[in-house]
Image 1 (tube, helix red, strand yellow):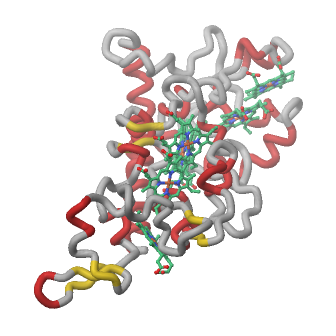
Image 2 (tube, protein in one colour; image 1 turned 90 degrees about the vertical axis):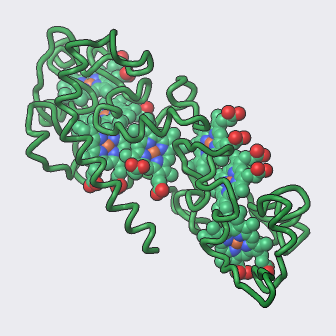
Length: 268
Ligand code: HEC
Ligand code: HEC
Ligand code: HEC
Ligand code: HEC
Ligand code: HEC
Ligand code: HEC
Ligand code: HEC
């Protein structure tokens, strides 16, 4: 799991850098919104005539969300670079709230990032880049949104629903991908670690959003052992000839990679 840890650390740095850049980027958007930004980067968090009022002002009408929010990752952010009004808290995603409140809660005067991820992208530039990779979930196209996989207010942003057999993360995928998440007679234990051991959930340069395009996807867990005279064993089976044919999941090999009801070697 050294890899995962490294990835975690790298990610955190990216987020912090992105967050630090956030205000500068927002400022840049204000200055040249149409000319230099791609069309899918929509407007910054600006609600004409409104100013920031702070989380407590939302309490009167959205008490439950205000109460659960401090436990969420975004409720825990403390950063000098985000100390500007609206840099953290409800309005960092929803925009300045004064007009929404004055109007008694008119939805026209508040941003809902469940409809438009632009406010998330202010800080998560790296995620925006992932959704622009050649193979991606259609979020930028407006067919999906962040909240189908993330709970923005609650304690667990990854939306588990109390998983038993499968890794907790897989459950948000299950809503839409029944074929891969159903129980199999011969399960592939890799699934217990979550779909994300093999797929980048936002997007990837590889087809099917795979984390790797070649056998390295599998060799992270399945040791490749060199026998005498160039023979390569994987799982005690001589794979020397197979590996020249294609990837591990090419037709004729482990095509039932998510699990099989008929073959313990996940071939069909
Ligand atoms: C005076 C009561 C009141 C206060 C205070 C209030 N809201 Fe609302 N809010 C409402 C009502 C009522 C709705 C439902 C509007 C609708 O469905 O048309 C709403 C809806 C929303 C929505 C959903 C909009 C949509 O697209 O459907 C968001 C987001 C929201 N509020 C955020 C906030 C935030 C953030 C604050 C604090 C800055 C806040 N509200 C303070 C009354 C309030
Ligand atoms: C990380 C960004 C983020 C922050 C911070 C945030 N929200 Fe939200 N909020 C969202 C998203 C995304 C949705 C859309 C949820 C959906 O469609 O299921 C939403 C929806 C809402 C709604 C309307 C739907 C509902 O669940 O009733 C209200 C009201 C709301 N937020 C209030 C708040 C309040 C109050 C706070 C601060 C205590 C807050 N939000 C902080 C991202 C955020
Ligand atoms: C004001 C900047 C800001 C905005 C806006 C923002 N985020 Fe974040 N987000 C952060 C920071 C900073 C972290 C890192 C927190 C940490 O690592 O503890 C984070 C962490 C996350 C995480 C990872 C949490 C974890 O436990 O690893 C997810 C998922 C996430 N944000 C999704 C969203 C979504 C979805 C939206 C829009 C609805 C959004 N963010 C809007 C700043 C922001
Ligand atoms: C198809 C489901 C899905 C959608 C849609 C999705 N995410 Fe994620 N996201 C995930 C999963 C799963 C992880 C955990 C990845 C991991 O652990 O390798 C994650 C991780 C994250 C993280 C923390 C790690 C990182 O990659 O930086 C952030 C931040 C984040 N998502 C933001 C967003 C934002 C913003 C949106 C909408 C624009 C979004 N996500 C849409 C599934 C999704
Ligand atoms: C709200 C529905 C929804 C959720 C939730 C969802 N997906 Fe998807 N997924 C889609 C859609 C829509 C596509 C695009 C299909 C297309 O472009 O033909 C897709 C495509 C994919 C593909 C590529 C399939 C292909 O044929 O190229 C993979 C892999 C995938 N999703 C994995 C995941 C994983 C892993 C999760 C959970 C982290 C997840 N999905 C959550 C709707 C969803
Ligand atoms: C051990 C690695 C691995 C894991 C774990 C994994 N996948 Fe896959 N997945 C693959 C490979 C490899 C392919 C490509 C198969 C192909 O090209 O025919 C794929 C393809 C897909 C596709 C496209 C299917 C199609 O018919 O085109 C979807 C959707 C998908 N995976 C969803 C998921 C979901 C959801 C999870 C978690 C429940 C998951 N995967 C876990 C390796 C994995
Ligand atoms: C996250 C780790 C992980 C990844 C990645 C992974 N596997 Fe597995 N796989 C396992 C575990 C654990 C088992 C069960 C123990 C064993 O048989 O080695 C298993 C079992 C198998 C089996 C059944 C072996 C047997 O003798 O019953 C096959 C075949 C297999 N994996 C193929 C693949 C292929 C092909 C890939 C790449 C697409 C892959 N695996 C990726 C962890 C992983």
